[in-house]
Amino acid sequence: MKNTNRYFAAAALTILLAAAGARADINTGLDIRGRAFGADALSESGGKISYFEQRSRFYFEGMLQKDVKANVTLQNNGVWGRNGEDELFLDRACISAGGLLGLPLEASLGRQGCKLGDGLLINDDETGLSGVKFNASLPWGFNAAGASFKLIEASSASFAGGDSDRDISFISLSRNALNGKATLTYFRDYDHTLSSATELSLMDIRYESGKDREVQWVFEYAKSGSGGVDTSAMLARTTAYGDIYTLGEGNAFILFADAKEHFNNGAAFINEEENFGEYYIRNRENGRENSLENLRILGAGFKSSVMNKPMKLLFNYFTYELSAVDVQGMKELGKEMDIGMEYARTKNLDFRLIYSSFSRGEALSATGGKVTQILFETNLNF
Image 1 (tube, rainbow, N blue to C red):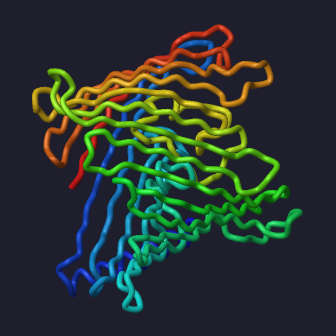
Image 2 (image 1 turned 45 degrees about the vertical axis):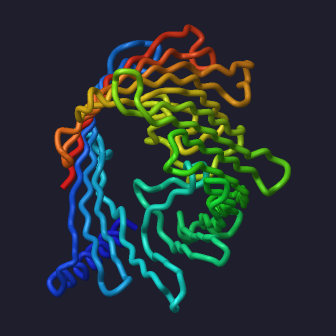
Image 3 (image 1 turned 180 degrees about the vertical axis):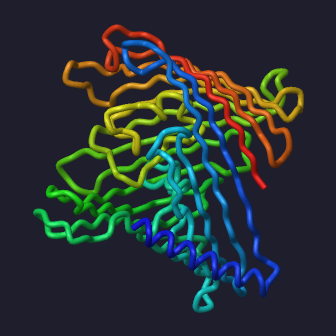
């Protein structure tokens, strides 16, 4: 599979480089992110953990002809100094076209990013998914979107079930209403990679207020379409924009998210979302790193500029619980506080410094205890 990706990337880059020689509307770019972490050890034995993580992305994008665009992105990331944790892969390799068949229809084919709402169902903008995606304008102000992605291809592996496919797909319908936007989505996850094959279907409803309002809010609820197992999840967030006392212009938010014990589909990814905390979401255990499964979050915070300078201060506070108690009847996972600063030196260079403090709850540690982390991040874009 890795060799296939390399051949595909080489072929796509060759095509775009050839196009660049014939046309002037080819763009290239590079972004580099470095993160230095220092934290207390997660185990009860104490000690310290420190490491440096990097991510580099190099892309080509451009117009091949009218309404036809192409994008190829290579990504390299990993932890410096750890063998086997550094990888180079094809992040994007897709072509998109608009005005298909003379209709208000746009489609893209290949490896591409995709996110639905706040990412309860799909959020893989970071690494991309392989498949086809479309957007269309419909009569009476409606818009439609849909996609079909292949996560795992069928192989010659032999086990009960007869194949090893993993596919996800969705179709959604949206329309502006009541000074906001309402969206209804049908999502399907077909997983035949294990002997106990599963086929999960979910209905998702989302409403978000207009982007031009000083107070914006979002509500999203997903529910399984099959009986027997409760796979529901919901998220609600309110964000207020304006001046925060004497600090300057900024925003403040309140967030509530909750997902049942079996809400687990492989296309959800919330690890690097701003409003979910800087520590626990990244480091949480028990296999929940790809979804909100059996997790309840209540959080609030603000981010504000400093006297109209290119610097912002941030503060977050979160509580985390299990949606369903564990075998010992425990629910509390812990509480987190984040204090940080963001500084944009230029439009191409910015820095982040975050201090996180996480107090472990009874469901994680019988003896309690606190874990602290320092994160320093540099982003370079050109």
